[in-house]
Image (cartoon, rainbow, N blue to C red; front, side, top):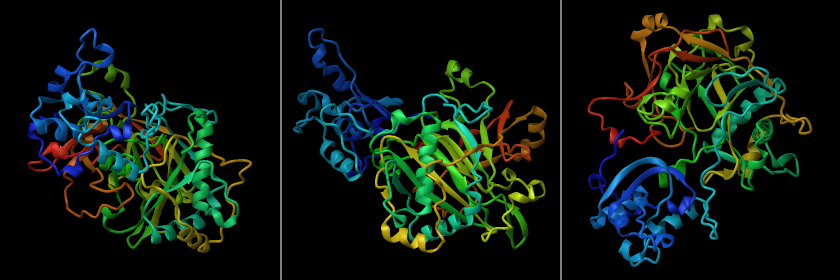
Length: 508
């Protein structure tokens, strides 16, 4: 997707333009990159003054608009990738500014960064803004079989949790009565007593330590590491859209909104507290599954899922015939973990759900005190930093949560959180299957605004904007399936009449 020339960018209010250097320092960070040719022609870096070598001036979008294009400089869009903004580091006469650092946006950008809880190491100007991503696809030693999903994706059962799911649901329902924000548990938190931690916090902390240990991430755990958690409670209704959790990337929402910088958890997890089959006024229906796509924020915003630049044959050849969507159906006590950079959601489309007649009786909600809701407990694992403005659960809310249930110590900390491997099934969609289903392509919409845990109240009919277009695979008896398409796999595309693609952000 092409970007407009800076001269064509609609001028925003000055306070909305910020310099990303305030949050990245000299750490290369994935963002939109602009080049100022005017400044580059005049710039000679200190170490190259004798050679006279000209160094290109890479600048962020805020500086491209406020510090350069506004002065008539020759600025061009370079692309997206890892970099940091050079605007503040070049000679003052080049920047043509009275500001000592040569960047018009520096001071207010630093102030915004501080409000988001981000500070720089003044000695090296390095920031912990970007959370470390997984290197490759780490293996869990407890897993006997290994799937061929391109990124980490694994499912487990938590048998010790099953007897306590109704109590956890009570706490989840109470939590959303007081707050729909995400909350935080520091990795080194040690409660001094029974009333210092509720079961939800304890479970989040145990999930953090279990996966850090299983995937050998201990060396990357920083002082500010921890677990970000929240709950999703979806009441069964006749309106499909009210049940949906639209596609999204888990990320630091405030940082993305202020600086257009993507910082993602190392791991994302889903714990299912309810089963697949639920009661409704029209009989039994199945709850929506979780879909995970092998697609990251750094990949193109249009085209085939899981590919890089469509012209980059070398990179795309590495993808091969790999699964292009993973589908996880709810089961009581089931746990899902995957790479925190991946596109995912729980669309409400009936074509993606199982049907009650193929689901085993033990996966129904009929024995639960909560037979007509879908409840999931979500935990993101951050190894280096707490997401902006995500806070520890207030004591007053914690006490209300504890009060509603007969809280027990769910997990014996000496043993840790026990998880057992849950089978994953591969499904190959053949040409014949696709021919039969070719007229049933569906569009899965993205979160329209706000954080990923906020309901989308837009009740308009057809999805417009950025969607994933997918032919639903045949229904399977399996709890979790990895779907491979020989052809016509899922794609990112724009829909809607006269839609202006430049007005859409990548993760809208």
